[in-house]
Image (cartoon, rainbow, N blue to C red):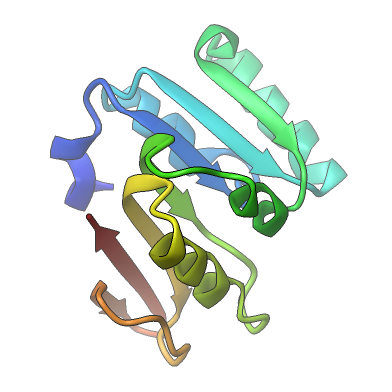
Length: 139
């Protein structure tokens, strides 16, 4: 998050494969004005809603129960300022999200967490941390 701290004030944020919502909620705490969470798993949605309620953030969040790849397939150019994706590993989902972003830049910045060995589309600034990597795409 510290890599993007200057990009977050007044930003609209998209948190794909949001799980508990940690990325989007932290973005809000760093000045983002709205976060949209996309998650399809029931248990994760319960955790996400609990976290939103505890932080009293319902007025600055939207939760969408839909498959993240289906959601990004429906987006147009620059619907968000910053998008995060933290998909499950070993399914090629990180590369699919990044490929969709390369076809249609639905945000100014896309940050994707993935396995360090996963082949990602070109054009990213990638940082490796052990077996994990973070790839950042910017327009």
